[in-house]
Amino acid sequence: MTVSKHSEAQVMAALKQVEAGRTAEDVAREYGVSKHTIYAWKAKYGGMDASEAQRLRQLEDENSRLKRLVADLSLDR
Image (tube, rainbow, N blue to C red):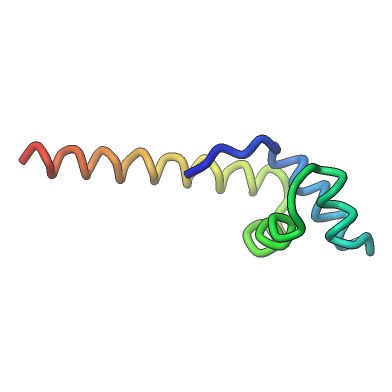
């Protein structure tokens, strides 16, 4: 999983701007990402607030770490 250079608060701010009527292209240019990234953020984080998005990222990181641990243990077997 790649590490985002944008915090959850920045992602939520970008999504709020799109919901307020700005175009995805304008918001993407402002944040230095592609318009497709804005749409991906909307699909992933749409309807969440910053704390929920942060918790989601923590759970995804923990899940990734646990999957690696299981893979390492099964290789040792």
